[in-house]
Image 1 (spheres, rainbow, N blue to C red):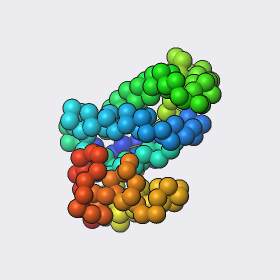
Image 2: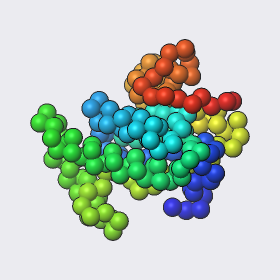
Image 3: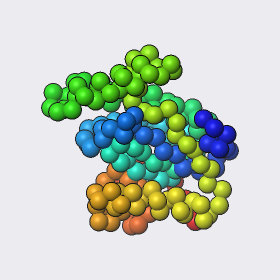
Length: 184
């Protein structure tokens, strides 16, 4: 990871993105999104993750996160490690997954090309943390994150997308995960 993309102060919110290798649309299936949601919940309750905003797209995830008790790089590492194993197991076990062999072959191929992996690689290695030190930068990233499903044509309004924190920011409703609102 280049110096431009290192985690700064863990207590300051960071915008992070991680993507599935080959931009494979794994998260077009709800059951795989749910694995990621449960992992984020676990990290909120057990690893000191403060989740400020989030969205799960079909092949990547955007988060705005911080932590007062753990290093963000360790939390992200653990999320990626756990979810990659669980999602690959779910794909292997899914008798209705029409793209099973293709996806598993892509994950194996990518894993063999990477000296840091033994067999399978699900997530791309980087996650490009960007420290959000100003209100303007925070608002820009928050809007970008929540508008992502709209730009992708998945919904008409950001708060209509189930796998996002937009409803927490645009209404009095709450989404699937506990959010620590950003002060703008």
